[in-house]
Image (cartoon, rainbow, N blue to C red; front, side, top):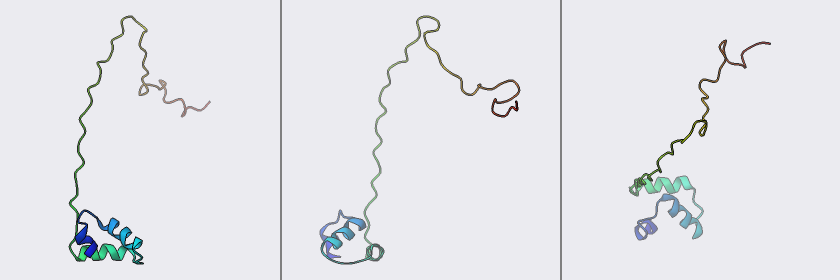
Length: 87
């Protein structure tokens, strides 16, 4: 655990990778167990919230039939959906 004392910013996975590079053949579960036994842990950093970008105002149509939209919720027939009907 000398590596953990030298490099306090390294977590368990980074320590395990460094041990493998130095030639140790150690199971990652054993590395995690030893890491916990020595009461080592990194503080979890909260993700910084990004500011919401200002959206440009929505343009209003200046004449009829300039802007079309579809209503998918109301797309059904009077006697039910088209796929359920038998012909």
